[in-house]
Length: 383
Image: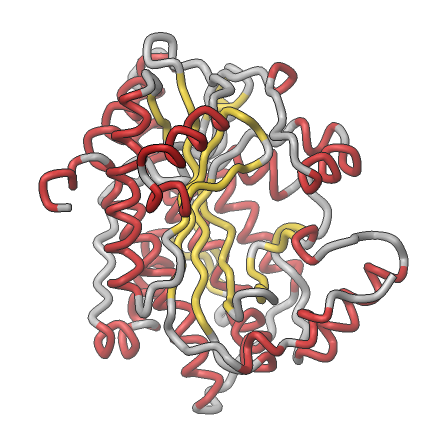
């Protein structure tokens, strides 16, 4: 088996720094019970008949009770956000017309993964057949951001530099305390269920240059480990078709404002990493075992916990780590007008406080679905 010709890195030679593509995944719900319902194809086909713009942006994600919208290529962050805001309104209008609700948390609190039906495509048949329980167990929802980076070696350098940043981004995004009908005691149960289970997932090793990454992919192909690039699910990866650095570590966000803020911070981190590389700023390649320690802390405690400052090897409160990201990215953010408005409490924190106050899981999720509907669909007046 030969490596996909796209793995030559040519897409990066033609890429433009700072183009942005956003992807958001939503649970498809019965509006009365808030159970997952397998109606992806119905919504997809309805969009094709009534809204070509939305139809072009809709994608499936493994299970028939999940739907994704993709902004497509924005010339910059602001263009991508405008595209995605318009698509959200169109999607929520479509869902309402077909009598379904949409949820935006990293997991569905009580859905039985054994009852979920899979999208019938060659790609997803391959995923389920190859991974079995691991794929069947994965009923999760996330936010991905693609950022254009010119040059394949630069893209690898950016991915390498982002590795120690990823746990902080996860902590900021954490929005999934429930799984399998129980309080998982985590801030991101999605990460434990998906990222910690899938092969070739989580925070990757540093590759150093494109040739080494290409060699890795070829080894996977030669050993019959993968048949296509998309079977490499790292939390940050160079996307060989789009010529982007794709950050994939974050939970889906309960509100539109949080999704916009998180996407903005991700883009700023990618572009600051590229600038630091170009300017020859020193980069310490921290031991993977210590990055992994922060990864676990983000899963378990999110923004209520403490992360390790890997330069000083000292604990810091997670909000201080988030402030450090804002400080680090200040040059790029100032130049590009990127101003992430992070909430005082993120999705997991709000839900965990409701848990501590004795509220029922069902009521907590209902409140989250309500704020999702109100915030993602509110832009209808300004479309």
